[in-house]
Image 1 (spheres, rainbow, N blue to C red):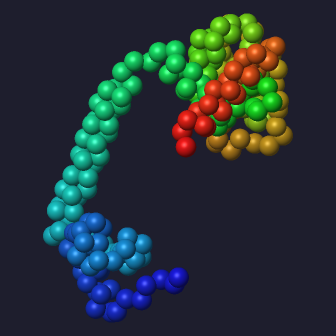
Image 2: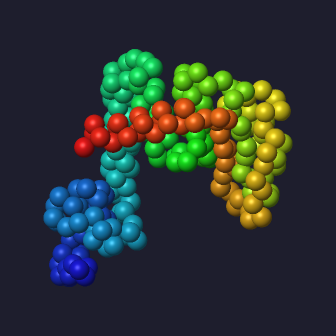
Image 3: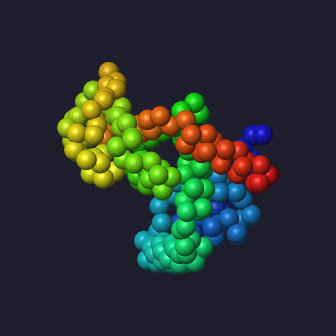
Amino acid sequence: MGKPVLSKTEINKIISLRKTGHSLPEIKNLTRKGYGTIFRYTKNVPILSEYRKIWESKRGGSKAKSKKAWHDAQIRAVKIIKDFNFKERMIVLSCLYWGEGNKKELSIINSDPDLIRVVISCLNDLGIKTEELKVSLRLFEDINKQKAVEFWQKTLRLPKGSITKFDISNSKKKGKLKYGMCRVRVRKSGVHFKLVMSMIDLIRVKIK
């Protein structure tokens, strides 16, 4: 489908509304046009000086609404996740592993330190001790290996010397994955792997 064709009168109305400090939602309501169309005709339109304060106050209002929405969401989240017992932690482990884990052995790799930390904590709940974990890093060649090791050891609360294996990529990180990716594998994980995969299968069946 092609872009909607607007008459010159409709285009001028959109531009005029923008010049007089109207927000995009206001213009949408007044013209009944989509955001893409409105943005196309307003992106380079300056707000007239006499209307600029009004426009800025509306922007501030949007920020205030967003801040309140975040506050309300956080309060609701606390009510929803009031307790965090063993069953709920196992559901978290299963869902994270479902999305990110290796489907042949109990192993997971990710660049998000909090995700890896949560997975390790949940594995501990299963009775898997830290010394049963084999932790390695996948790094770009321009990442400082020592700093990466110190970061992951501190974040994951691992003892010094627990990270000794590295997979170094010849490419540059170019601003992404500052500390590389961390891979956690459970040694002799057959029983635990089958349990996690069985929990995933059960979640898949129960949530249709």
